[in-house]
Structures are given as C-alpha cells and as structure tokens.
Image 1 (tube, rainbow, N blue to C red):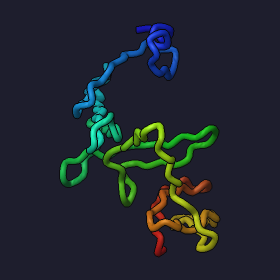
Image 2 (image 1 turned 45 degrees about the horizontal axis):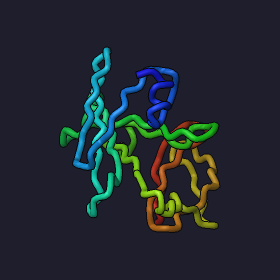
Image 3 (image 1 turned 180 degrees about the vertical axis):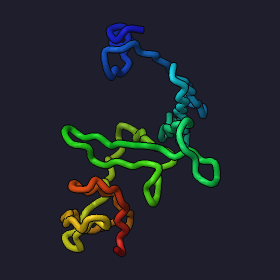
Length: 159
C-alpha cells in the first residue's frame, strides 16, 4: 500500500516507498523476503515468554558469507542522527550473525547501552589511535570503530 494508506491505518512508515503492512497474532512468526537481485532476508518475531506480544525481532541476511557452522555473517551499520555509530562486517574478529531488535513493552525502562567508565581509555589495535571511550562498566563488551583507520573491534571489560 502507499505510505499515506499505511498512515491512515495507523502503521509506522519509513520512507516514501510502498509499504507491506501486517498485523501479527502473537505466535512465533517469520517473514521471508527475496529481493529482485536475489538477496534473502528473514525477520523472525519472538514472543515474550509470558505472552503479551513480542520481545524482539531477529533480522538476518542469508545471502552473504557464512561461518564454519553455516551461520550467515552480517554486514551491519548502526546509524544515529549524524555519523555512523558502529559498523560490523564478516571480516571482524567477532562477526555479527544476527541483528536482534528489542521490542520493549511501553512501560519498560530503557536499559543503559554499553555504559562507559571514567578510566581505561581505548586504543585502536590497528593504528594506535587514542579513542577516549573508556571501559565498559557493566561487564559487557563494546563494539568500537576507529575514526582514523575505520577498524572495527570489540573492547572487553578486562582489556
């Protein structure tokens, strides 16, 4: 349907192109898409354990390289309002295999993303550029991208 029709029916819209709008029922549901140039992408909606909607949608391209176990590797760019926040590609030391987009309940409190501590600044392993991002303060690794050489790497809390 056209963008305007989607808006009239209270669906979210993204751009000026045609929209395929679906009402999902709450059961595990996967939407498979094939593009004219042969790319295959799945959108797998995972219900919350307690019911009441979905907890996330896992997005995966099935057309690129695969790891030794046959799992597709993803090329991902996280975008903000301005520069790219992070980039991941199949050549990374720890490549992305799936994109999990969380779907919190309206009453959920948004968790803090990869919190940064006050000390332990990061240095790019390829060019030595000082990044000044600090260390993860919540025990989770951070995905970092060097602004100079564009190397993407994972910063673990102990490193």
